[in-house]
Image 1 (spheres, helix red, strand yellow):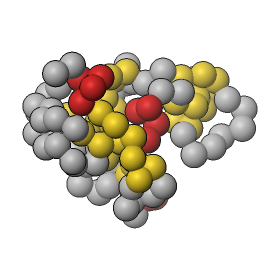
Image 2 (cartoon, rainbow, N blue to C red; image 1 turned 180 degrees about the vertical axis):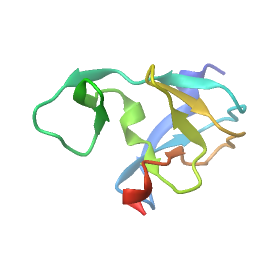
Image 3 (tube, one colour; image 1 turned 30 degrees about the vertical axis):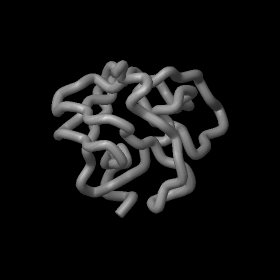
Image 4 (cartoon, rainbow, N blue to C red; image 1 turned 90 degrees about the vertical axis):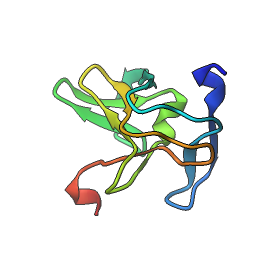
Length: 100
């Protein structure tokens, strides 16, 4: 199963829409890279980078916050599985302590 087919956007209990696994994703798997565009008006899908705010334009923007995340964003904007993710699990990232 390709990783692209292993993800789907669906209704989230955390916030609006979320990104969910439809198949098993192994720990350490690069799930994808955030595609972005510069923005002057921050919104729901904005990342704050050293070069300024950017909006994520791919479905990775639906990864919601969780204090115990199963994925992480890295400086190159890759999203990597921190642990095994099972089918049906929502992908989550720790946005920072301000989100608690």
